[in-house]
Image (cartoon, rainbow, N blue to C red; front, side, top):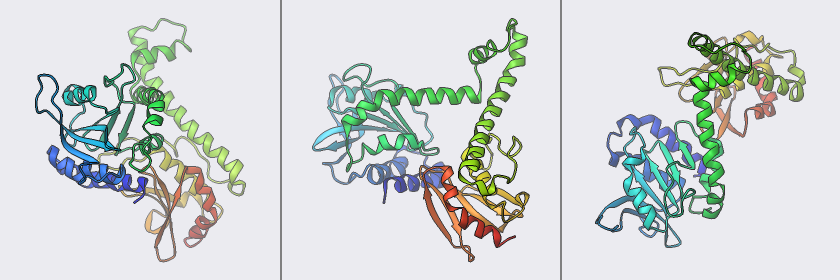
Length: 358
């Protein structure tokens, strides 16, 4: 199974029965060992590749064990410390990982609860594991930018030096992205002050901070929507002139998605893809008949809000995106795409599908 397919499959299993993984052993068996085997490509039953319960005496600490040591060319290269699914990952609960990293030849330390995988090295001080990971993989929301570096740690493509060379930039890029995401979701007082002082000359009193905080949050939301809309309009003008006069795009149609309580999370990319499909098929069918329906498995684009009239499906929940095209018998063919704009490459098939329901 290909690297990306293995990641997607394990992520789907985590979604299916992650709630039942109430112990560390269950998490290891169901998620972590399959990850080591199928994503990293190591034989978990070969102690020359994967050594479980790896032991090394450290000073007065005798018989302590790390969950897994990954060996490459007979040398220990990665140490993996495991927690049960759902458990918060805190470095003060991973003391063995710190100590073993210091005395072993390993240059990569991994802390995981099966869902989140944190990768550490020794950027700050030689032979001492950093307190911040240089790479974080969340199987619930896989960051495509992390995959090329993750692939360098697989058995077949192992390239430790390349990973370490890129680690410092990765560390700060990923950290800054998380900070930006947090600021956009819940603007801090300092962030509000930074933005407001650029547009407001008065004193930022407590009352004015209370006024401006929701204003900043609203501005961020509208800015995100405007960015999506601008990208859509550019795509329509440059790539699909035949549908340039299609459905208007406004804030009511493309909004920053909010978390739902049923486990279905609609993403901006799914909404962007929906608008592209809607624009493409507008030449064949009235645009306001084309609607969306998001599910745990896929994001559907439908006619007249009925599953019997599906134009296509967007499979955007994992690193590899797919456009699902359906024939007259509703048999689906998944086409891999690298970005949302690639939907335009299949405009003719989408228009054919829409004509069936015109």
